[in-house]
Image (cartoon, rainbow, N blue to C red):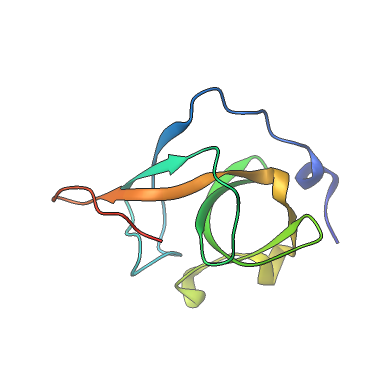
Length: 113
């Protein structure tokens, strides 16, 4: 069941790109805690894409497992350290803030799927 707070539609982004810092270990080994990522805000959500979503007042970075009927099912790449759709269920596609298109460690940016 979805809480009323998670049904609130987030504000539309103004710029096409955003920079976010990964917080936590839910997306390891793909994304590391503290790593900077580039987010393309106007991308369409597709299964397999790593996205930033707005949920319960927080931004979360997860991988889309499935898209169905205007809803997305999200999983972290590190299931033992991830709070994802297995706990909070399906989310509206409108909660996607953008798709992660690049990341930075201590080396040049790399593209990811």
